[in-house]
Image (cartoon, rainbow, N blue to C red; front, side, top):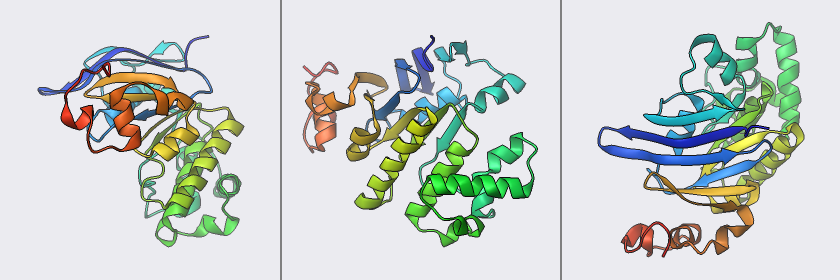
Length: 259
């Protein structure tokens, strides 16, 4: 069986700035991969290339064995239906109610009545621990944690195969961040999803990941099981996960092999 996501030698530059420098990455069906790394290391560009929002300069990106870098029109639309996305900050539409936010993609792609859409939204709200009364509220009436839950409900509503999480716990207090982590684990497990997350939050990464990869200066410098992250024997990874002010990332004294 082909991997759910497979990248081979993917490169992307913006002018003279090399952002992705030969990325090789495989995500198997049901895997939860978390990509860590500092700001500006290419994490968001990586996701955008997989989604087709940015075209890589070279390399191969396959979803379920299908090359996707040159898809257009209906083929691209069909591919996008495989994806769900939880954006940093939630990115809910202020002009729409909660139920309309949750069912936005479904209503774009399917013929569904407003009542059926409301019922579906309430079902998804229940799955993320919110009551049906939330469906009629506007995003501005929700706390940050509730907005994240609604955004998660929207991400799973259209029954995607793959969900991308962009800094899912940013802006949340530690308790609510852990609640969101638990919901991500529960929802993805219940639905059999494959997930790819990018985050700075090591507590979140350690909890939701089956595997972790670290990006630094456009390269994947370490990949391994989540339980190995704090014992990687890679100096770059070690500095990042322990949040140390001094080390190879900031001092630039050793090579990317961690030696």
